[in-house]
Length: 267
Length: 353
Image (cartoon, rainbow over all chains, first blue to last red; front, side):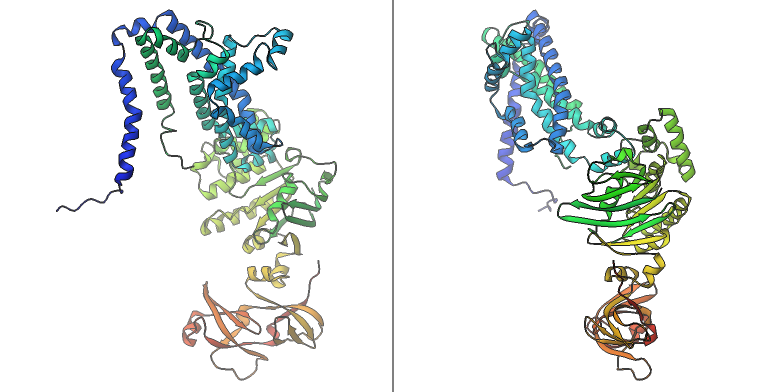
């Protein structure tokens, strides 16, 4: 008998379910590749429906991410420093859109920003702004659903930042704004990138809230996921081609993050 | 540049009560155990903590009157060297040092030039392009000092500036710091729990315990007549509390010592230096007036002596040679006799604060 090399223990009761989980996650992606209409791929992607869906997806998801960065980052800071009263409740409210079925988020947005909604009637009669069934509505829906990802990431980053750096900057004469701009933000920079990418990926994939609140109008509110959904009923190969594009985008993003989420978190 | 600090500050359950005036050009060491309120004192002077009562005055300006007036840190002329230095990890050394001048309104180029000047003066100009993560402990300490001095503060606050360094570096940096501080015209408040820092760097030592000043004196005075067991232990002597009359000292912890001090009467503190305690296996005969039995608790090597902690009436520390330890066959638990000459016991009235 040859002596066994000492290795990390591999208990079967963990190994087998683990491998099943891997298969469950990977086989569908292989299935997508297998059924991809490689021959007509170019024609499908340059069709007007696909191009417009791609354009709308890019514009709205980037807009939603930018909005989230500009209002979500300050909120994350406020939550981390527990400056507002009822921080615990506020934090729970921030997480709600993460857990809510997206279609419910859509209903919520309709009741708030719809033509007869709480804020919507005021927006439409007072300012003449219509959100439902417009591209702006898509941005609102995506921001609502995706911003919590950025807020949670940033709050964690602000929270784990050693307060002495800000103290030191303050004793050196820096104003609050200078401290935030030159010390706080650069030190949480990697987290900001990660949070923004998470937020953007979620906005890109947004379906339920968008179709409920903004509808499914090609060229106006039909983003990639909506186009995939619609194509699936009429032209399966278009749906698969578009899905493949989104899968590719996700993989590229993961690689671009250089495994930030592929490593186990230790710090 | 006088600092008048007469205030209390709250930190959760803890209260710091402080009342002292710092003269320009002096170095004041704040000595005390962990949790004594040393850092809270620095933070209150810097404006990172607000006073609950009383006031703090820097160079004739009330910076905190615990009522309406509270100047935030940028409005106070202070330089703060944090424990572990808190150098900005994403900025190079030059940018770290230039951060203060720049925040106080200097242009980018002028601030960089000034920063380089300060780095050159401290002798570390070659570190300008390095990131803090690549610095050794001693280098980081110098950069932190340069950063604090670059804004030309009136008050320099140093929080355990040498604690993060290994022993060899510490001795070297301590010497450097002595020079830098003597060149600094403002007043320096230095927090430490190392008595050597206090003795070498400071003109005046304030001992803080449990949020209150227990002693405020020159380093020499503290070394000679420590007011509390904490201060005595730092210096390495045994401090005994008791009541004296006609040279006979009745100790609070039990036991009687004879002293040569016949003039003092009433409650006193007595210092017994470890070198003045002799250790014997048998009861000694002869001249020493003070002879009593005890049990050895521990033996600890320190430089060329062994410090022997002996339980008895009173309990004291004796310092004897390693050869004596071997000759007498001493070990924890050994029964011994102790003796001290009456003239070796320093007695002084209890200091009030």
